[in-house]
Length: 290
Length: 277
Ligand SMILES: Nc1ncnc2c1ncn2[C@@H]1O[C@H](COP(=O)(O)OP(=O)(O)O)[C@@H](O)[C@H]1O
Ligand SMILES: [Mg+2]
Image (tube, rainbow over all chains, first blue to last red; front, side, top):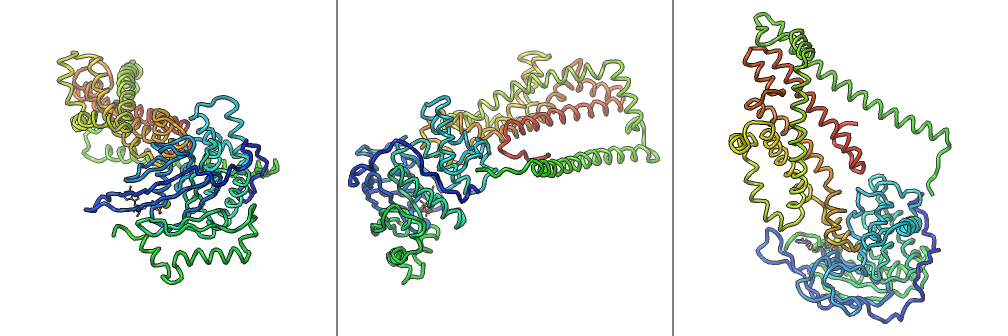
């Protein structure tokens, strides 16, 4: 039931008209990152000179093969990892650690199993020093918004994977960040649940017009959700192309079966070079240390 | 949003689930009791073997008789009460310190650097080895026993608690940090609750350590308590009394563990308890 419900688009969160689209909010300047794997003699270059500017209120997808450094890049954006070289700026300010203006949804299951859904969603609000009934009401509102009404008192292990992800989203939305960093949030879900959650996310984005940076390895997902798609090469991750998504808004799920959509995703696949290489480049990225 | 069952269906569904749980608990209890009866039965058979010496391997009715008279005389209850009091004191002190120190050294790297060498070099020394020193320092008495038991409980608790802290998945910490939690808040709201199952493991291991040390401490220096009763039984060749004391210690330890298990089920309802139910 909750899996396939749509988010009600009746949230009156105070975000007015989208600001000037060209205004830059998040900026990455020449980011390089190395890891030193336990059994390697030399440092492993994972991200090689990534520079990006992300405009306020836009939905940017970052696509790349597994292992190309997408999660690392997003952790750097979030201020959880400091890059070996380069810097990340938010509204012109250099990032030095986690920041309440940036929320992150992780690839892993990160809902706290020891808290109920309600308490999970309240967590971020309380961490920001808010108290009392307001917090409870706010959390309840977001639980409803992600389609988990009636599951507030459930513990995460009593929910399906898709419902846990919904709880995770509610938790991040509730903290009302300016920038939402999402790391393959739907990657672990079955196709039906994923499409339901994508549609819900899109509805909500249409409403709130947050700046979203969405990492995925799914080209259809990127095309359906984003305004701009950033392509990364297999490790070391570099930006190989930045392509716009020339699809109108708001988008309904029906768009996914339209000819323009097919043409677009085909263009994306060619960009990746899958056609010629039969996916071997993707596999190269998947392999361990070179 | 949540589909509701009709009342009659609800009752049927509940009954089915509760029935399944009850059956499982019934099987659990029956098997548990059966295995105890089996062991007692084997013991009984041994006492009936030709040539078995009732002074060394007392038959069941001798043990029951001894237990009866020890209870009637008030010796056993007073010994059990004395031991329980000592264990409770030592256990409480040792485990409180164990949880405190264990979580600090497991969570804050600096505390680990400071405390690891001390704790890791104390750990291989059995708590009993401190008895001579403790006797020299505080004399033979209740304080000495409580102190030694605290050390034993502390050492077995601290290891499990800090292991739990080090096992907390990084992503929970990252999630809390990005939601705006300070480092102190992360400690209280992520590290502690995430390692509750490990803390309980520590508490349960410490029960065994505390009782083991108690008996040893009372063997050496006590005028009362189950260890004393044990020792006296051996000296006067009252094997039945030895057996009675052993069983009492076992039962008390088992009860403490059972209480902890119930408590764990309450405190950490989100994580299934490893055994039982
Ligand atoms: N802590 C780490 N230590 C060493 N290597 C790491 C570590 N984390 C990630 N890596 C390596 O960095 C690369 C990129 O990882 P990640 O950012 O998770 O990729 P993606 O999210 O694109 O799949 C991988 O090849 C992985 O082996
Ligand atoms: Mg990843």
